Amino acid sequence: QPTDHLQRPLKLRFTFQQDNDPKHTAKITKEWLHNNSVTVLEWPSQSPDLNPIEHLCRDLKMAVHQRLPSNLTELERICKEEWQRIPRSRCEKLVASFLRRLMAVLAQKGASTKY
Image (cartoon, rainbow, N blue to C red; front, side, top):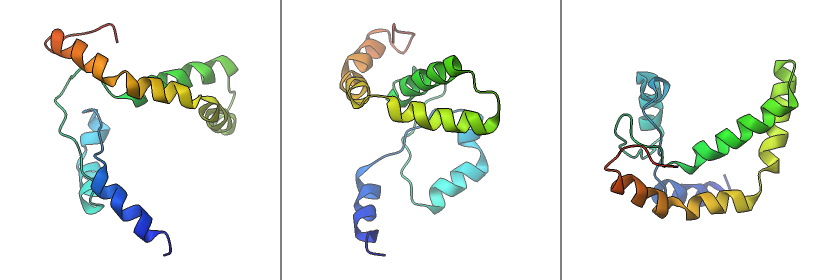
């Protein structure tokens, strides 16, 4: 494929992070990640959540809830619409705040933070 050379370097430059939710640690999930050569960050159980995507998921959940979808088709459409509405600046702010959130976690020795 013409774009194959563009996709390969991404596998080398990125590490996948997930929490230890049972669906993420299921045998079938681990096998899929391994078979697809996905590098996964080791993440301790019940670690404070430092993953910016969790904040975006919360934003999405709140926006979708306000629109009151009445069926699965509507839910899917609304999710896609609301995901597209999340400003790039929100993503940039979450990524930029990582060091500050990490320092707060370290200061709390892994306990809860305001984040």
